[in-house]
Amino acid sequence: MLKILIAEDDLELRQLFAKVLSKNGYAVLVAGNGQEALERLDEEYVDLIISDVMMPVMDGYEFVSALREAGYTTPVLMITAKSAFDDMRQGFVLGTDDYMVKPVNVNEMVLRVGALLRRAQMINERRQTIGETVLEYDSMTVSRAGSSMTLPQKEFMLLYKMAAFPGRIFTRQQIMDDIWGVDSETDPHTVDVHIGRLRDRFRSNPDFEIVTMRGVGYKVVKKHGA
Image (cartoon, rainbow, N blue to C red; front, side):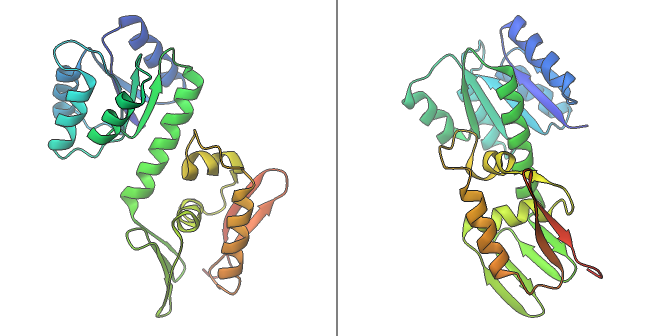
């Protein structure tokens, strides 16, 4: 079970977030400020952190800064009452992965948490193999039988995402949220364009194919023998 740490000094919000995340299948740890959160991290591994900004003892900015300086790469979703661009920029510069402004829509929070966790998995794995085809995240290359091709970033990440779960259907919206971001204003049909390009590139690949599930989305399917 994936584990999430909530650093929030408001007891009611902390309990609300914990309840919602628990109902969605996550294990939850809580802390009342950044210092407590760091102490919890010394005791237990977590997959993602949700942190408020305005907290006593150690605020969210100080917490994220200390977290990154200590070498933690855990994804952080920052939640705050501040909406100014400079506040968002400060959080991102310090190492925040995503940002939400209060009042928080908890359903949106769950979507963002899921997207951040999937991105983290993609980055941590850094390599996928289907049959004899190898996808290398660091170089964004796809190799097979001594031949290698470097893909544009979005195309690679799209293929990498689906290749991590062969046979699983991904909707356009899931792909948009994970690859382009929850806040992206890009037309969802751009996914179709990228899928078309990937199909053209790997039409003759003997290990996998990209299948359209009409009205639903797409999936990568292993070919027989792969």
